[in-house]
Amino acid sequence: MTANPPTTRRVAVVTALTLVGLVVAVVGGLVIGPTSIGATRVVGDVMSRVGLGHSTLTSLQSTIIWQLRAPRMVLGLLAGSMLAVAGGTYQGVFRNPLADPYLLGVAAGAGLGATFAIVQVRDGLSTPTWTPLLAFVGAIAAVTVTWLVGGRGLYSNAATLILAGVAVSALLTSVQTYLQQSSLGSMTRVYIWLLGSLASASWSSVDLVAPYVAICIIVCVLAGRALDVMSVGEDESRSLGLPVRRVRLIVIIASSLGTAAIVSVAGLIGFVGIIVPHIVRLLVGTSYRRILPISVIFGAGFMVFADTIARTVLAPSELPLGVVTALVGAPVFVVILSLRRRSAL
Amino acid sequence: MNSVEIRGLSVRVGAKTLVDGVSLDVDAGTWCTVIGPNGAGKTSLVEVVAGIRPASEGSVLISGRPIARMSERERARSVALVPQHPTVPSGMSVYDYVALGRTAYHGLFRSAGEGDRRVVESVLERLSLAEFRERDVATLSGGERQRMVLGRALAQSTTVIVLDEPITGLDLRHQMELLELLKKEVLECGLTLVATLHDLTLAGQFADRLVLLDRGRVVLDAPAGVVVRSEELAQTYGMRLRVVDVEGSDVVVPVRN
Image (cartoon, rainbow over the protein chains, first blue to last red):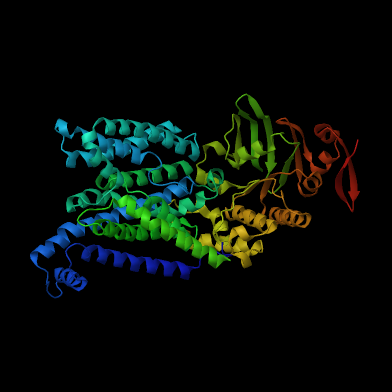
């Protein structure tokens, strides 16, 4: 480690570079695809919509940009920022570097709900409607059960809640696996959902989750100061005047609701929630007041970048998004880690 | 006026009684140190006074108000804690660590104000920590680190500070420096200190009053000079002790059997 925490200038530089990366990812997400549309023409179209100049896009190109790529890109921004900030807050509130947004059972609950919806299609349920709904209900129900089993945060410490999450996840995953195995015809669709994808993104799915996700992200970012206090442990935080149980409850509600909303429309996208906060921590230090807002930007750009790869590398087929986030994220993390070690020597 | 009042306090964990019906008063602007052998209940007692452990029976009042009825924020504005093994989060600057002491003065989601910053700056100056303000807390020496933890407690601007073995792990010079700093705060700022210490000589030299604890009960509660020269002290520790006067200060020396 370096002798001093990162300076304000360093944090400003990292923030600026992350913002540049986000803009590049957004433009790339709009212009890259099987149908080649130049960046300048896309930018010209955006400008024409605010009354500056005129668009040179054909109506088909406009539809591809604004009805296919744009909602997918916006959902990617929401998913990346929500999962990254939720992972960061969980790592802070549980003081556990291995924490991710799925820690308290969101993934297992959502997986069970979605599998139930997909498997029950033959009984007349409509998959596009029911899968996100039951995934959301399953995720929230799982976290609620974990909270209750883990002692409601009243007489328990963070470790008890984590263990409750492990137990609840194991139980729900076993039921989900049984459901999946019992309906071999639906197995591929279940499997694809479990690996996460933004392929079904539309403006309606963006409208559905955006308000909840935006509020949850704001709450998580604002919790950064409280999480910095919690870095000295629960007893010391309480002696400093922090209402630890209330903070934990607020953070768990915001992270779980936001993650459940994202999972309901994008499936289980792994790796982002655990790796992005760690990458940001390596760049700007250990303060959650810095980690969380920069994770929001970094996570958003990272997800759009990964999705662009996922939908173009094997076009017209798609790679599972969870596979790409791990394939891209792991080397990035290793490179930053080795650079930091070298600079500390 | 009593700053800390402890009334019939008991702490139990399962079937084991750690503190058994302790009652004592600590006057405002004085230093009271709890001594006793390992397992006497010293840490449990001061943790209840600091409000981080609930009492099984009895009550603790800070400036006349029951601590059990205070919110976390109210309590943190009344009593601060210097724990025996403070958590020092690597990567945090000394300034930010001391500023944690202002947590109770701003809201859950609000930033520190100008008043908070002034308090932190003043504490850094008083404890000669200003030159380390940007340093990573993990790079400090033991003595500097313990001063910083005291700084966090002072930044809470309380009238009472509870210290659980504050000189553990420090060399002799740094032990004396820290205790002198604390004495100065008591004399100049009217702070009330409730501490635990294992070193009987230092406990006797710095505290106004010593409370000798054994198996959760108060054996003797008297001025420091009286307790260090008492029969009860040797009996409680189960060994022979001699008290030697060195330039007007009592030095407690264990004697081999």
